[in-house]
Image 1: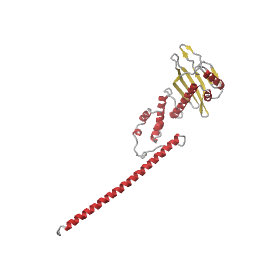
Image 2: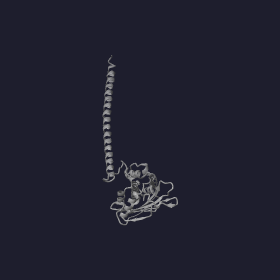
Image 3: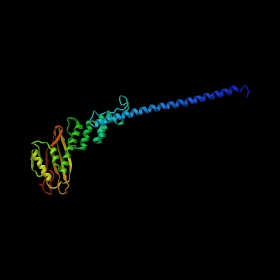
Image 4: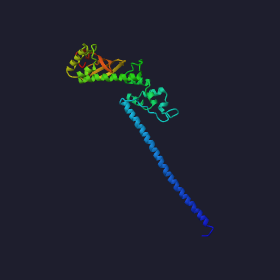
Length: 284
């Protein structure tokens, strides 16, 4: 090896050593950076899980009767933030879309975020839901507390009225006694056409009704109701499982006392079998 080639060889070796050290430095830097990013993402996910858990606990507390309903607000949902396609729709289209939801779904939607809560509480949406689930007869009604409250009150009366017929199926005199208002002005007209006035007389009539013969199967249809602050009435048709009989026309009137609805008037038409009236007290 001559003196002219020695500097070139030394320079080549120095360059390789520097390149090797630089490569090792890049590998170590990338490794530490990757671990740092991994820890940051893990911390963010933990924060998100904690936030979701807190929201779930809030909803559980609200559904169990405690506290106020939480409202979930998404990041960037304020001024200038991104919004969902549902929030970009005009109110009329949103209301029409919500009309396809049932009662539980509309309640769940109101718990998603503030925008959906506002849309789900829209009076027009609850009016359409009322007409779909109950009746379109009351289109001109203007409920004092809005259609959402009116829907809830109507559903409550419907459930109470259904309980009345469950008591009849069970032939329970104690159940009927707790269902009626204990007052001297209550009245009950059975299928016999006889009028019973006063709480004691009404209870005696149900005792006789339940003791007469065997119970019969029946179905309730065409249920309509009208609810006010402290009074409500329900009309319906009752069909006995007899192909030769026509329907009963039934009217129940309820009054609200001390936080509870009570039956104060029951009127059942005489059932017709063929062309003659059956005076037997079939079920009330």
